[in-house]
Image (tube, rainbow, N blue to C red; front, top):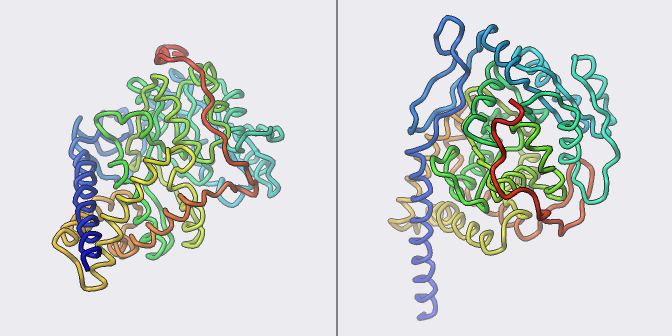
Length: 414
């Protein structure tokens, strides 16, 4: 009996500490950086929702940037868009059509990573420049190898990398280029398209685990390098600076490539911005709930870029503040702290509405799947998956030391 009381007291104490950590992280949302927005049109009216300098944002639908303004942006900034693609014939078409229609873009490069499904032919037919990927060298993950080749082929001063499942809105590329006046690497968080309420519920639950661990997108104060985040679906940087450091080679063995890149660069003095781009970028990540569970759950723990101590602490936070209150509520044993944490989770659900194209019942019910998200997070933390896109990669590759220790010259290449 006494042992049970002691254990219960330890869990209660740990839950109080974890709740304090989560509340402190969520409180950063009151001072988020403004979202990415399209430039004013030629008539002077804004083409996307504006924002203040310190408050948060919702992710509404973006509207078009004026053609004259966009053309000026394209000629001044020289924007190249690089899309790495491996067997993406079913998804890349809408992405390329949107990119090629934006006059701010100077060139579109698709790096065909040894596809077998006609991806290269479709990209060429759409009007993109196709770079046939070289065979994958030992020690490299496919996406980093494709991006390195694409950036090497690019001619623009500014490079934007996009995944094939993204759907950019007019004005995205100019907004990213303008953001590079303040940052050396910019990453955009999109709004998400989900197929059905169950997929949306699971997605929102998994997304909540990231927010509980790292706080909302667009923190006013940059996190330390080892806690920096990025979204590899959309990155922007200056070509000369990126090729000068050969950053993709430095993170060549990481499956969590986007976070590895951001942390590598932040640790070397680069200013890394992770901004809300939901008004200008949409993504349909997965074709089913099962694929979402398998694929996003694979990378969600950030296992290959996070130390063991932080992984354990992050897991504890998710179990104590997200999963445990739901489980206790279902068992009829919820405490006052559990009730408070459930209320916080419901408030977060409301805040996430702008992160989805069609927020609905799935988003509202997402807290009920928090225990499932905690289970998936635990599985992938304890047994990291090293397979992606039909390739299996060896474990144990880490960041390559070296590179500059100061910020790059942000005027270089202008």
